[in-house]
Image (cartoon, rainbow, N blue to C red; front, side, top):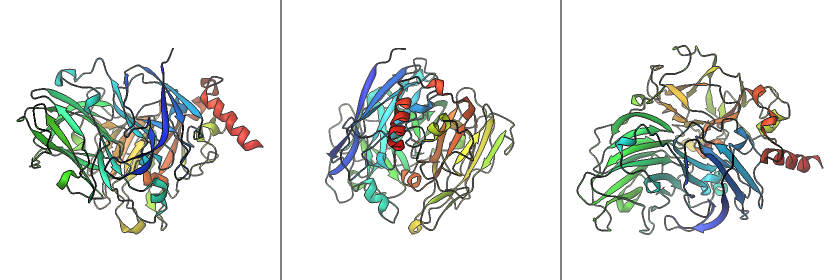
Length: 505
Ligand code: C2O
């Protein structure tokens, strides 16, 4: 099918989203990157053009479309050293994929080293013309995306070399915020009209902290979780972890005024004075002033176990833990050097992307690199994965909870953090789940069916932890991954040749 190609230029730029100027790596020259909008069933072609030149940060790149299944287009998943070689400076890579059966709130980000912490993150929304919740809201457009991110005054290479936990300097909402001791720089304003109902699309585009999200004076009705429509649940606060998304319906039914939107991070400054960790909900007709509203009281708490998919609910396989076709119980840990382990192994990026190893004939986990971090999964089977919480030992700071993200799938969370019972009947279905707290001996268990051949990353979405090796690769149905799916001239073939030219001389 014909595809309209959109160019996405990756550039270095100095910006001051919180009033502090620093060098960044940006998609399209803005933070967040441009909103990519599509409709269910659309064929998307994005030409990522690498114009990076600042050698104090990474100058190669690759872009991952977080939450998009990439069915039969694993090569477009954008993960450096798993599905592709990084794109060199002054080169480009055409991501060409179809969002066949998906709609909802997604995002894109660099999947190379700590590069998205330097800025390469943006929203991706797939609208559904037959949205089952369409009668619940009046407004759902580009202006209703609320993207939460942490922000650092140092670059990711500077931070990663430091022997301590990285504490963000600011929380940015839609790319604007303030830092402690900094200037009164502009905050994001979400504009509403009295009497209308809005679908707000919240994106946890964090490198590290999770945010407790609230809006003074307004409840939120959750209708979507990570691209899955759910039965509506009303809350007045919700936790959003790195990688997660929610759509909430908010009715502008309060007095015409300004109201604080608050995103309290679990690390760094928790304060709200002076507009820290905040944005503004502004009714049409209200003055352009900072709000004076008070927070709380919070009486409608979030319960992940109370979220149920709207359709096709129910986990696959036998409704008993440990009784899937393949059961993987991870033991997680951290080393004295502050690296993470999964079943005793720290993930280290292989020299040759896992997909290219598979396409060149290596089929089995024992031969696939990185050694001990690749799990071979059979085709069309029910997989159960259990992940315990673990603390980060480095400098004694808490590393848990850890939000785990699986590429290429959504999964059923048959055991949510904080619960000791299982739900196989109507569990929450999502693509990023938090393991909760080690102190509570939290442990999450997920199920999915291997219907999507390809090597897929499963990793902690705290980007600093992924850099410290907290991930594995699920090599799903390797025998079904055929080179014929990669037509001559496709970017993948181009990269294989590029790799051979670079490594055989
Ligand atoms: Cu949001 Cu491995 O990614």
